Length: 148
Length: 70
Image (tube, rainbow over all chains, first blue to last red):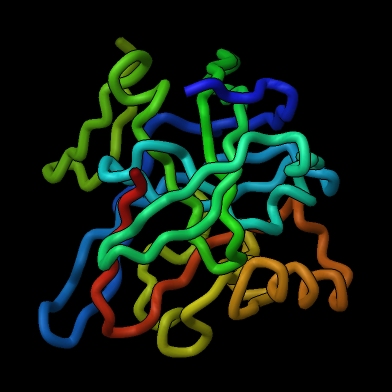
């Protein structure tokens, strides 16, 4: 797949150790939510967002409105589709984002959906298998990004 | 360690599903919306300094979440 590299945004990771977060489900009890904090270089400055570390997602994914905040012209981006559980398909645009981890810039391919309710998802492509191991340390209750 | 909430249960009950802007210093929810655009509109109405908040997705209370992309 050929991805456009014209549309860039900066992501800064402030730390590579992230504490576990939780939610409660009445039928289940406490559920671990693997969120980590990442900064995005937006028109408002560097803003921090909670990204869901999603080993089930191919691509890092952002909601539609972030294209405006990141000054990404979707008219020039490659259109694609993403499918979620249940077969729900949403239109997406493929972009390339330089990610900065501890002063290191890493380019990752990412997608922006056509919905504003999409969670911020940190996908595998260009990260999990080539740059970091993602360790879910249940003893310490932290997510560790270990450099390869 | 900042004071941002590490448990989404109360956020889900009060604000979710949607997005919230949480003060890094106090842990208080300063803006919210059912989607990211509405959250930003709420933040702009309140003239928030967004560089001092964390923006987080809030899941619907009591509902299982599953995400994947292909």
